Each structure stands twice: as C-alpha cells, then as structure tokens.
Amino acid sequence: MTQTQGRTRTFTWSDPAAGAAHLGRRSGLELMQTMIAGELAAPPIMHLVDMSRMEAEEGRVAVELLPQEFHYNPLGTVHGGVISTLLDTAAACAVHTTLPAGVGYTSLDLNVKFLRPVTVDSGLLRCEGTVLQRGRRTALAEARLTDPAGRLVAHATSTCLIFPLP
Image (cartoon, rainbow, N blue to C red; front, side):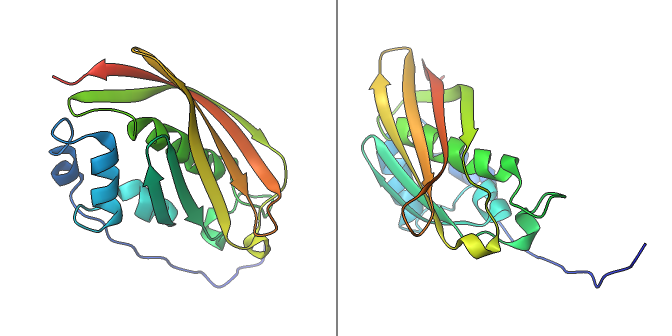
C-alpha cells in the first residue's frame, strides 16, 4: 500500500446554543435573514460542510457549495451524504422561512435523487429549496442542486412536521 501526503482542514464555529436561544422569538424568515446578515452565527453544519452564500425569502432558500476533496467518498466523487445535507438544508430552511415566531419544524423525510457525479471539477454548485405546500401540521418542499451550466445534479423532496414551540 502506498502512503500519500496527508492533508488537513481546520474550521471554527460559534456556540450553537446562542442561535437556538432565538428560536421562537422571531419568525423563521427573520431568523434566516439575521444569520445571513452576520448578526447571528450560522449553525455549525454550515462550517463543517463548507456551505456558503445563503439567500432567503419567504418560501425559498438558496445556498452554495464549492466541492472540495474533503467531501469525497472512496469512489473519488462528492459523498451522497454531503449532497443530501445540502438538499435537506435548502428544503427545510425554505419551510422555516414560512413559520411565524413560536412555531418550529423538523424533517419527517428526505427523498433524494442523484443525477450527476460531483467532483472538484464540477465548479460552484447552487442548491435552491422552495416550499411546494404548507399546511397547519406539515409542509412539502423540494430542493434542486445545479451546476454552473444550470444542469440538474440532484433533486430532493422533503416533508416537514410543523409544531408549536414550548
């Protein structure tokens, strides 16, 4: 077995409890916009996966990812879990933007279709989540991951449970 030179990656994040303390006090859209403006720290998962440039409006969230080697699986492509995390983030956060203060949500399911392999050569990926339907107890959202040429790389649908926060 051949040894290769190791690579390292270091990242930092803020205390997630500080952000969680704002749940229920602001609407979902206000909370997302506060994070985007840098007034509230992004959740640690954003730093772990290296997601960037989030946009949010009611019923829609977009986030970007530049594929890196540290995202790779043993096949030499971006791991499906990284892609699924991106899709889940966009879909669920889109639902979050529709919720008033005092209301929370959680994902019930995530159905993902991988359509193209992703590597560092794929370029900057854009993931856009939109709410398809929101009721009192559940919401249905989709997320579309596209490459710089606008080609669909992966697609997901997600159902979220909506509930009052204590």
